[in-house]
Length: 110
Image (tube, rainbow, N blue to C red; front, side):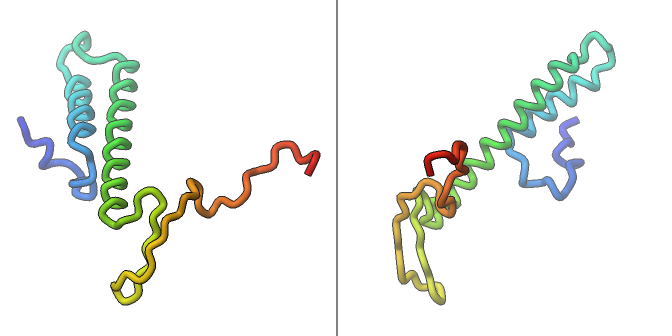
């Protein structure tokens, strides 16, 4: 009836990627088919739910990257501000900041 967006949990409104929502609602509609032969198999349901999850993950990643770019923190850039005034702008080439040592797998020889 075109009212699915009106019955969604208010907590989730605005947090679901449109592609994810479309995939999820499509499989839900198919599951509600009157004839059992028209309903998807459990494998199809699982496959579509995994697709929806990946679509949401991709949208979340893009949103996170956009926020980092907007805040000037892409590619290890660090900005220090005091009273909303930028005072230091550094570039960190370390791809894993905060991770100083990896786990020693073979402790012999150290």
